Length: 256
Ligand SMILES: C[S@@+](CC[C@H](N)C(=O)[O-])C[C@H]1O[C@@H](n2cnc3c(N)ncnc32)[C@H](O)[C@@H]1O
Image (cartoon, rainbow, N blue to C red; front, side):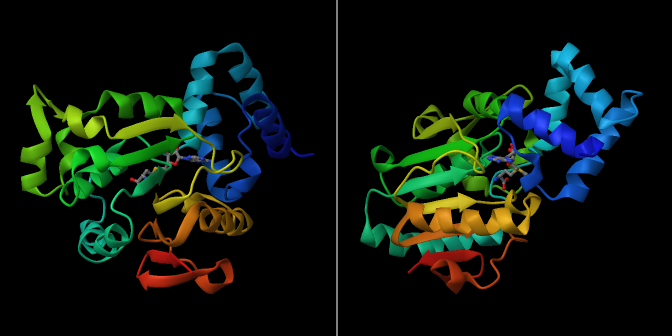
């Protein structure tokens, strides 16, 4: 086994994270940049150093899981969700079950809760939000954000659902209570469900084609018939029919 393959095996044994399901060139480049920064020469040396230094584990996990997110990311897509997809879903089920899979630091599930709150009373809203990265989840639970993460959020929503606290914007407690954060590895853990809507954006791009195909099947099984999978703006599914989906709108796939 080469240096990187051995590293993958050791990380999997230790954390359950299977790096072989992530696109190799990208992941290798990011982690090699980390060992170079630390003055190390190989993945073997990186793993040995990580074993001695928990902070380096943290840094390595940070490189593996790219946490970039923002509220209302790709605003046009959220408008389609609000104007076209949600009215149908809500007509079919007035108590929708919603999952933000790979939710990072919480911007996406809180956006979902805010958008839903425009249509249904808060007690009817329940959003499950999961990610593999516990640090990201801890920040999500805190619910404090910088101006930059709110850049795309419509002004009316900012006014309604945030309070300014020094340099930070704090998400409204009533919105916060509608979201449950849990740790979940999309590539290893059983899927919850059934859901009316699954939002999984800007994470599939990091996975191998084979891992993606497995995930499409699992998302399909986790949706009720008529339920929708909402993917990121570079993540269109090639041949959705193969997985039991039809295109409802670009980036929105309805379970047949
Ligand atoms: C770029 S962020 C996307 C956040 C959000 N969905 C958005 O579009 O703004 C990617 C997230 O995927 C998470 N992630 C990576 N691999 C994962 C896995 N196997 N299972 C669950 N989450 C994963 C990372 O921890 C990170 O928070």
